[in-house]
Image (cartoon, rainbow over all chains, first blue to last red):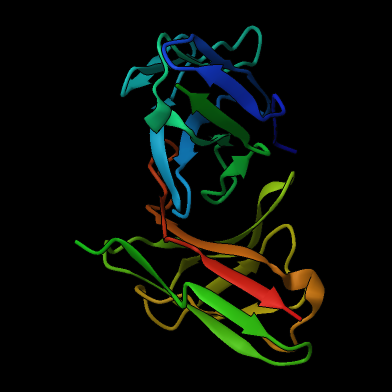
Length: 113
Length: 114
């Protein structure tokens, strides 16, 4: 079945540091890939997505590239801010799974001054 | 545009009590789902629905019931609460059979069973 593996957190960075959160997946066919973000006390919201190989999703300075050869969708940001502190979830949706999203375990990011 | 609305935001139950978590969406989405979020386990699918009158089990359905009488509403029922059901619950909705569609989440319900 489908699965998503994320690097374990928490990740603690200083402001303006470079961020990478690793995500790899297992799925049949060509899934769509997503990054969701959860700010403290809130629900999840879509950060970015990619729907086919070599697509790059981007939003708010975050980027992730759909790498089919390595089955990866790593999240990156060149310069993090304190306001980026949140939990980040990698997720996928495959064809034929009745719209079900499969999530990774989430990675908590804490950015300090 | 309200999006996905969940109530209540917080709830404390005694073991054996029952309750219903409410979820409503105003985006005319066919697909609705319930997840529970536990530390170190991410989000796990409890039940889902692809339209009014149609529901199915997800990954962790035991102890929970759902129904979908309208497109807008998808309540989750705990018939006899257990401490293992202490968790944060999220409702989500999206278009159905659109692989790259965005899922919209409610704010969550933090449930404690004592």
